Image (tube, rainbow, N blue to C red; front, side, top):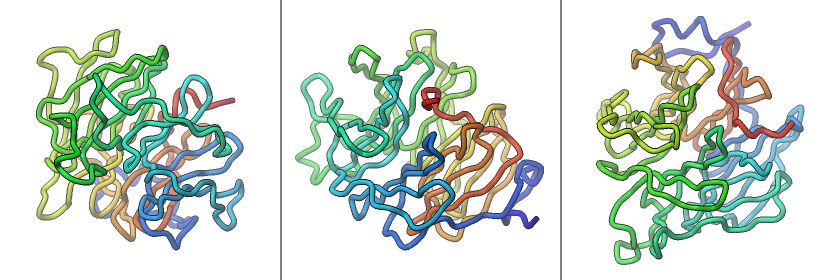
Length: 298
């Protein structure tokens, strides 16, 4: 079977199990893929402010929602609903998997409106973490928070600031398999940061480190991020999906036709990647298993 093209291979070929397939195309700017238990895949088109669904087994993509506030990254919460970041809506919202029952969950922190939530992930204890860069703030005078940050929302609905120091445009985020390390992309700074967490999910003082750095002249800043069950990181960067070992060594790059924005695990076992890249959505099978969302419904 043909294998996806690799721009660099320092061990990555042993993990890839098939070609890069285009499963949907013809969009403006795709983002936030999420596999559903019925076998379908949903994603966003930020530029069109629409959400789409690929039926189980493939076929033409179906419109799931329009006027979605430029929804972006999404994941399942402990209540079985899908939680998603709204770039233009400047909030985190949730909906039923069929796209109905949309409601805002959080729009402000300590009385100040959020910047522009970008991506959201769930910790096994049910806490939702999300990044809040300024992409969707219409003008500087409408920015109410003095920083760009990572926030956490508990199952009780309490919102707390996780970390903001040093961030310019925090973007994709993911947890290590044990939940004790949080990885966050900063697109403007061309690196991925790592933070060690205590049992409550707070950042341990002095644990902040740069996990990996990308050369802005050659590669562009990192966007979406996911982790497999063995702790490898998969990062959407300019030429494709950059795969790193847990120690930060680059294993290689899965090439994509256009710059990827985000990615997620495909299937209940996470044995493939769903990749959004400008006007298309792609799939590539892997020999490893991904850290699927902890609250993926049965």
